[in-house]
Image (cartoon, rainbow, N blue to C red; front, side):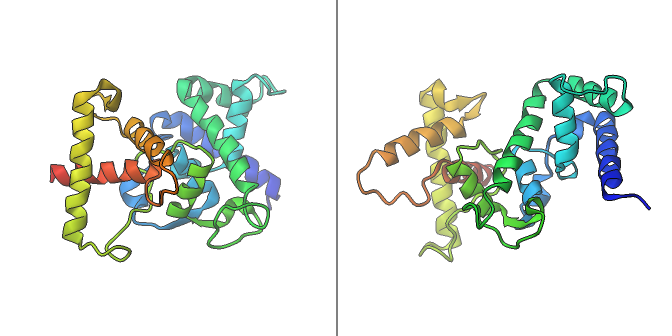
Length: 238
């Protein structure tokens, strides 16, 4: 029977081999499916925060590849080391996202209650496997200044929380999207390719809101604004 350490090494080696075979699929989470699942393990939520496929939500392989990329491996001729270095080369500029995954998982794990303020749905002896809500995680990640993929689920006011009907809510989201298109048309600063630059628009709006004394800024965080623009643009395309 394999020991826990042997199982861990076996998993790490398998993930490295898988990543070498499918390097183009290491990043690019299946967001259509993910939006339908409200709760994930913390390690998975952190992986999604850098658009890492859930299969690779494992600290072991990421740490091994990061060490090899920085020439910190002691076993130059070891098969796994050779594989890690080859993978680091193939990932190229995206290696910084692997490093972000390692750093973010370390930070998030250290912020699980009772030691931190990261909201947890279900505790686990291994804090990396505790369950978290993606919308709660997104709100917490925002307080850390983390950049999240545009597709990452954020909490948006719904008909249950406001007096608006679904029709009124859709109309308002379309208006938000239309205003973002207007900004993009008026200034290249707010344009990314031929689309509105959601990040730049969200940052500009938050700066304005934060400057208003005693303002109720609930729902105007950058993550909320980006998500409202994204959904509004989708509604305009229907």
